[in-house]
Image 1 (spheres, rainbow, N blue to C red):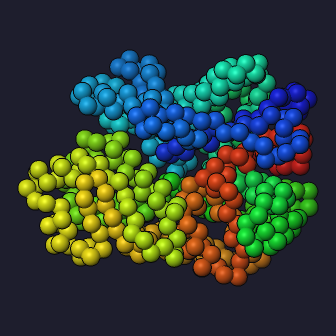
Image 2: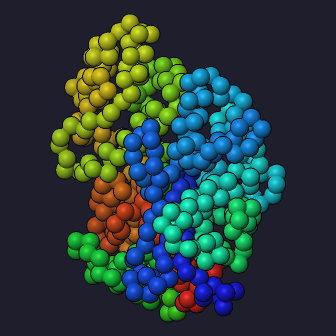
Image 3: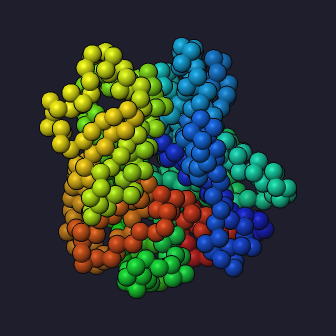
Length: 446
């Protein structure tokens, strides 16, 4: 295998998430001179007027279960079908919440679409991988690089809590998508995150005053904990770096919906207390994508708000939510707010909901408590007493509120958050792939 992989021109990594997925790559020649020269593949959404590194993990099939669209295109086409009441005979898969748990590599593993209809999960996951792979190859064609699939060593990330069954599922899905075993490696997500952080620290990427301590944590014998806070699942792993560079697992990986879903739930409950559960559910059902955009805007705001922020936070809400509520209830939203405990804490006018900074931060209280409590319970274990560094990655590690919570809870520990923590796993997987094809010391899992 190694003699074949040595001639690969580049490494490409795919990170499939419950809500969003992404792909990144780097040329072998670039990696040899600058290990952080990693490119991310970009996607375009016409309806949202944006370009993004991440793409919705969404697949649309027609009435005959033939592939129609992926990502933003799938979202937009399905949205049009819903508006025209023609979506019932189509198959739309999104929000891959089954990634929270172990996937089995049997053909009996099923996944439900938006209407509750089941199809083999292997088929849908292979379409996700196929489209992520195809989009990257098309970008190479557009600039006439001459790079083809056989020039690439592919890396797929998998949760640390998965057993061999889940890894085999991903291998089979990749093979069905046109990535054969000899061109593929699997990388545990926390291993990828750790690799990226070590490379950043080695390259002396500055992170205020923590670099000196964090660099020490990247040396042999160092013990550290990785907090991977994804949109759906928080996964905690503990490692020790062995003398040969291998990452030794010190604790069985643990994970759960402690952060992302908790924050989403708190925000959802706030809206329910204002407009009522029946009206909000009706809105979410009839305006699926507008409801998703609302959550995305909410999460974006959380990356900007600090513990010291005093300015009111402004969220963009769909005007249709306000208009339908006032039409159905024959009440003005401001009058409704006056009847709640939030009268002095927020205002809602048109498409803008404005709330006090402290009130906004309070929406993260449960998520913060859940995470800190779990980490503290791990650190009480005798074999983890030497852990002195916490590495924060994942989309919710972009939140300054969550970063502050971890730093405040562990003032005597080094907390390192890499630039763009939301794609740290993805970039680390690229580094992992280069280590594989260069035969550097690293424990393989494929």
